[in-house]
Image (cartoon, rainbow, N blue to C red):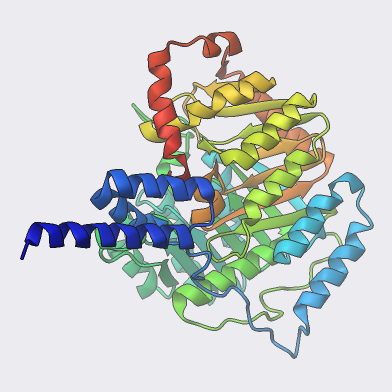
Length: 481
């Protein structure tokens, strides 16, 4: 018996089986080809990468976000949301954004709300005092959900407040991503639990190298107090995000967050409860205590939320960004730390630029991943050729995830402009409609450009060929980054 022939035959059969699994399970063509190339040319490494990060959870739902409704208080929630949302859309001061509002309502039942006030928070030095003030005001419940929580002065202060509020009888629920917040999985969390705080990890990591846990992480950063106030954006609970008291060698972190008060909190709360039931194994329901009536003076800003993840039937966040870009008439201002947009977003930005819309993109001058940075640079030429402007932030690391369209749409959230945020991680973006927030965010964008260097399109086009090769190779892997 020729064991070599048998071994080769088994090897071929295994590779073919993995290839068939990839073709069947992966919907994105570019991603399918990338995985096939890896499996064929680097079979063992490619197969490991696929089973670690490539299994399609959009087909194999991680969990059901649909919540049970307390029938005594709220009946037929879906119908109620649609009816009220469309009634309020008729009152829009800027009706040109209605197609985006309709998309989010139809795609993910995200309610369109008019009764909110919204506050822009720039960097951790503005966000953290706001967070502490909100927590101090809590009377019924505090809900927190973070990708990264790291031990330090900031998180220590937050922990003190949470423990005190729990002693006062406030219900404190805390979700932390078990991979992003792995630094607190020991004593830090145990102290919270011992003090009366309910704390659960999202998708616990036990055997990192053998588990599908590098992707499908909970990348959300969300705080809700009494169902009336919320914080959402890009800033995690870590000292690195605060520049108020910089130490020697401290890298300046540029990030953005929002405070929302009023009806705009409702869908964020709904999302948290779904995450909580999944992590804690509980069955919290839609009831009035979590969705209180808002006062008449809660505000008049229009807010909607785009929530996406591997559990969503569609790529909600990418679709909402595509629609927002398509609605642009004058300007699109994008800030993102990771720009691996894929063909759909890239083409939408190119079409906008070629149509006379001023497209400006702000990205880090030096990213925190060489491979991701090379892949991102491979997309710059296409945008520059279309007339877009690209700026490299030099003051520090820009981690904000924002977009401004004309004077009508502002996007602030947790989602980067990359495949990971569109398909692989759990994300949320707040969509604020109206000129006031758009003007504020555009002003911050202009301030950031003062600390950035614009890429010269001619020089970029005439770069040496040896610089193009690693970028092109990284781009082949971009669907997997």
